Image 1 (cartoon, rainbow, N blue to C red):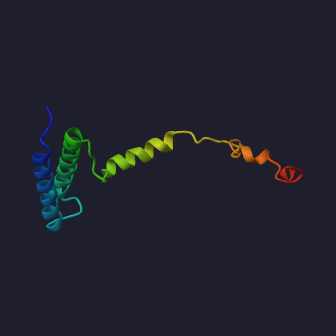
Image 2: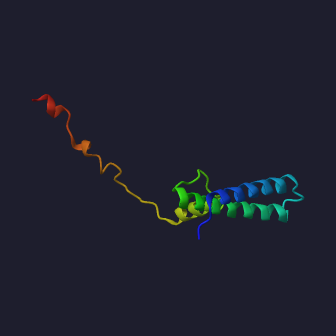
Image 3: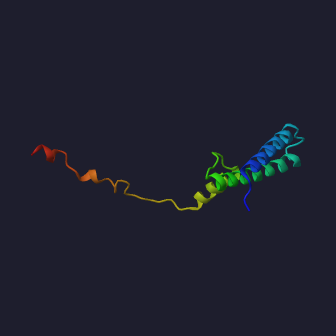
Amino acid sequence: MSTDPSTALEDFLAAVREHFAASAHRTSDADARVEAAYMALADAFELYEDALYTEYGEVTPFELFDDVEDERDDSDDEPEDDDSDDDSDDDDDDYDEDADEDY
């Protein structure tokens, strides 16, 4: 069952407002209300983006911080391609420009 994008947008905007209110009235570095609002905002964003994509094939220009970190961790696990011959695809290396002058 997919969510209506308009409804998902309203829920996302409400989560943004709640996160702002919680942040503006933070009581400590480990304020449970801020943490809960943060998680609710992330969840609402994902639901909105999924609904937007499902209905219109569109995405937002945003990525969740955890997703960016996960991508970074995944790329750190992949071995680097150690291509010692970086010019192997360059066909012009063997071309002698002076050879054209003889014709």
